[in-house]
Image (cartoon, rainbow, N blue to C red; front, side, top):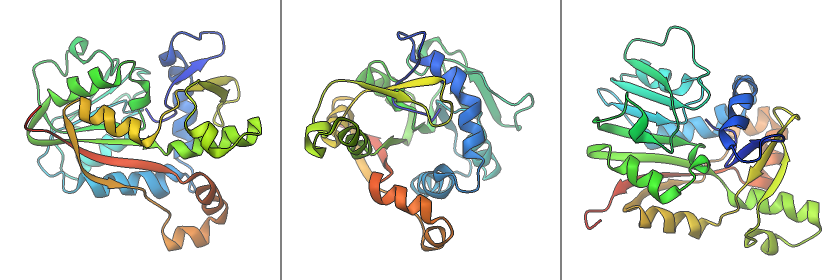
Length: 255
């Protein structure tokens, strides 16, 4: 799952998962494009922070159609589980990969996860769907094997501040520190409304700490020089909106 921080269909304002269920196929089609920022920026950065996955078990919470997890299996990861509320999965997952429909907010209710630990747990642009972010991170932390870590990526919050400042005729600072939610039509499907919960970088850091995690490494990935040359329209977007934040999180020993 990688569409938004909190999404909803225009006719069902109370259930973010309904919007993602409808939007998931459109997102996967967008990700398959040659100039997709997920392919050009996000996935390379995520792989960099993951490192060697040979022999490692991976739990992907909000895995979309499981495509990224399948790549990790091909790279040597084993006993991998992907959980997504949409259930938009291929009919025959690769050996060593289990894809299950479930809610990342309720890990205890996902049979494929119950009683297991994993070397790597992923929230790749899915963490915004956590109704209680601290509770969700604590539940994931409890499922980390010894020496395991969580890889979490989130949209750079300045992106939203830029967009809202332009729309509302306000300043960047006003919008960055605002607390109200805002909605707009998805670029992947204009029939679906995405609703964002605003957050600052300090908000994220404080959530990590409250969940008993520390930041071992962080990235703010950018396009490669080759990609900048090939896709100047994407570089123009990155220059304005900055992209994503990526964190490798480990359990604090005192938590």
